[in-house]
Amino acid sequence: MYYCKHLADVLLIKGYRRTSAPAGGGVAGRREWLLWMFGRAGKRNSNNEVYQFWQQNNHPMELVTIEMVEQRLNYLHQNPVEAGFVANGKDYWYSSARDYEGEVGLLPILFVS
Image (spheres, one colour):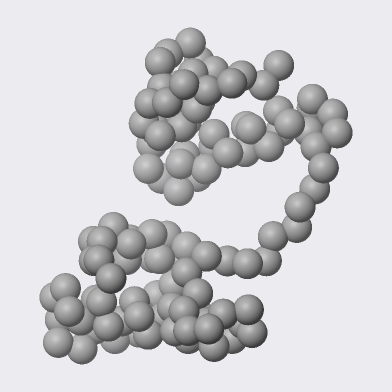
């Protein structure tokens, strides 16, 4: 397992709060805390063997109108703004919002029209 210093920040943004400092501190302490968090989530869900990283409670919905597609696309483009990463959705490097604003994004996309 590899350590990512930003993963703890993502967990904090999603509302997970560590109640005490990780045992041992530093990289090893964070690793143990993350494994404990993923293990605790894994035990709560019978679909897992040990760990759970992603949420598994999605509700698929068919997007039958262009308005529904545009609403979901706008929602996705606003996620980095709501998380406080950027002030404007097109400023987030990994977002297709920059393509929809006439700029060149990181990856080529197929436009929703």
